[in-house]
Image (tube, rainbow, N blue to C red; front, side):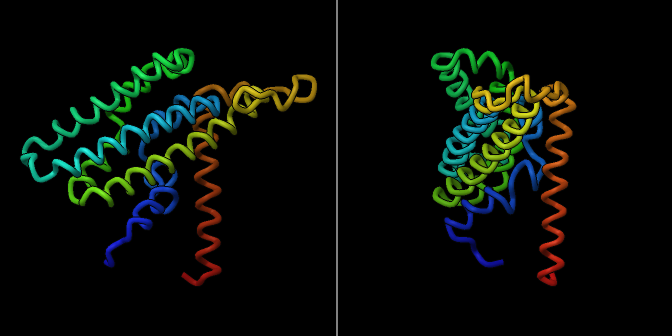
Length: 206
């Protein structure tokens, strides 16, 4: 397999290897906090911060960590950056921090972040690891924002707390702000994407 460039490492996480839509990683926050666009955005940015910083650290010290203790070491590194993100949100955005509840601390066990540390950053130099992590984080953020926007529009008639459909013109779908709405929305997103991906393959003769 040809070695990817820095740009290719970045781009693959946006779409081809998107954590949620393609690899089905990080599903807990994707389903739990996306009842509004702003929650999805903040959770995505917090996760991006953690995955970029932890991958950078893991890549930097990868030759110094004994193989036998690599997983505990990575968890400690990730937990440190999660704590920074959690404290920052509590200090600067207390309302959003309260709305996200325990899901920011739970970034520690987000398999998307651990997978980038274990399967990529621990085996690659600094620049490719940072590009991979940034692409993965932004791809994850994009999905959370889109999912949160869909659910907020249909569930509240607003997007980023800006009302775009009044109650007189639209009856909110309460199910969209509940857990079943998250499963339905994400399932439809993945189904539609897979459908059009298959159509494109057939047209291309792949």
